[in-house]
Image 1 (tube, rainbow, N blue to C red):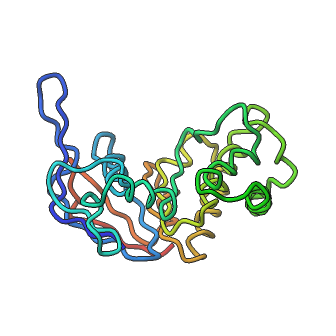
Image 2 (cartoon, one colour):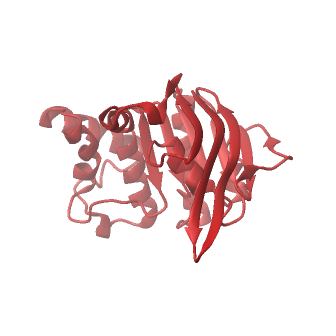
Image 3 (cartoon, rainbow, N blue to C red):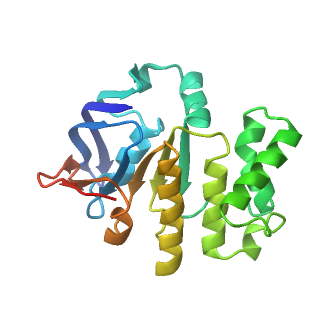
Length: 227
């Protein structure tokens, strides 16, 4: 699935160089559920951006299914993001003037699906996340948990191989966090690879493996536990 070799990324901040990723070597297997944890500023979100094909690292190599991700043409990399990689964010990123159904249709519209196909699949996915009775509601008419479930349905629209989730439960209460993580665990059981950034130990406990970053590098006591 993923192989990172000596991946390094730095930023310039107030005249200083900040190392976000420090010569990282990691492998992520197909159908793995990986939680990336660590203190604020440890490089978690930077690593997720690198894995998602959105940030070319300064040094090192990122292999995705054996291909060097950042040696691919921009159009091919964009196609990969649209077909093989799904994203879930803390802030949901729903379009406020579109209904739940229309928000889920967006990836399929961009992928060239017919309107009939879009509506059928979006309806099916919203039913899967328990929102069959909210398809005509706008984001402002939904709770935060319901909005995140719409985002989860949208992530599945193009049937991605990988789901990258950046603090997907960060804005949710305890009960709703658990519900969202149950859905991600279900998507993992479908055969997908889930890579999750979180600061919450209960959320990380859903993963099969936990990678702890400290100062941009994997910590020596990287934990491995059962989901």
